[in-house]
Image (cartoon, rainbow, N blue to C red; front, side):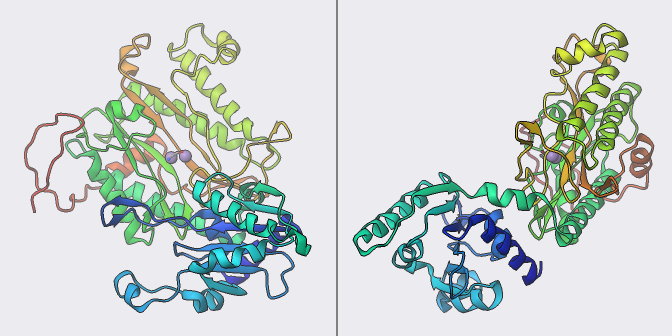
Length: 464
Ligand code: GLY
Ligand code: MN
Ligand code: MN
């Protein structure tokens, strides 16, 4: 992302904040995993969107109309001893030089400097209620400003959630963002193809996860946008299953919902595979139905259509198909009533998609002025219908039970219609079966230890 793009983003934010407002954007905190170990650090998306600054313990302040420059950043100062252990810091000079700050202070000066910046500002935009300690600290600064009332200094009177201002901007992706998201989706698509070639009975779910992550990492997608979901058999019916430690059995389907994050932008792709490389007739019937629903929904992902049109198309296709297969009763004439009574919901209980961007479930309202939002070029979203029929759904013919299927693609709305960013991940029955039969690569590091599949919770340690 160029410096000019960050400047453009800040200009728009300043315009939205207005001449007597001020915006405060805290960096994400580090979070402890156990004792001296932290979770991998991920910068807050809004903070990153506005500054590009990757370090924790920082606060960005946008002060519209400030004579010395509108961006003030508080950050960790350079510290040779700490940097010896933890790596380089930008420091106050670096943040001015490389991140567009007009003024920078060591973070320890926050309580001294902030009251001054808040003087004569009426409205403070910040992430209200997200971090109670930050809320309290802000109120202390405001208290200091109030103490200057007799000197003719006004203190802020309104405190407004910042997210709404940025989410409208973040919802429409710039050319550079679109290019990044295309690359992220292509890396993830390559990883899905790799998993398809590797998949076979006897492997463990986490081996597919490892292969997926390794392929992304090797191509520059160093982080996953969310923990990979690799659910085989009954696990495919658990929407956000992340245990990933069951052994794949001949005759199972396996659902893989995984996507890398590239330079802070997410991809989010799901493919469902027959573990042995061939869909059985009932698996195929359900799979083709989900695919038809997904394609019907993608056809509705065009400028001018409303957000809900995609979900409606998916529901209509799925309900008609379930009626045709005899899973829902009443035949094709009953379809409108089955939809009205939401009879599909036990098998398709989530919505058809979400916005995608820096966050996998990205910001942006789905309804505007009481109506579903209209799609515009530059928006990116997922389309991900599914069918989930666990073993205990005894009202469903036995051949369709124990199957979970989801197909998810990343869609960029374009002036002409849409672009499927994740199109390189095979998804027709023929393409998946052909990819899976394309010569099995060896499983890196795997030496069979001959243990039995005891289902979830049975950990295995690979021999060297
Ligand atoms: N991977 C989470 C989702 O599809 O929404
Ligand atoms: Mn998704
Ligand atoms: Mn997903």
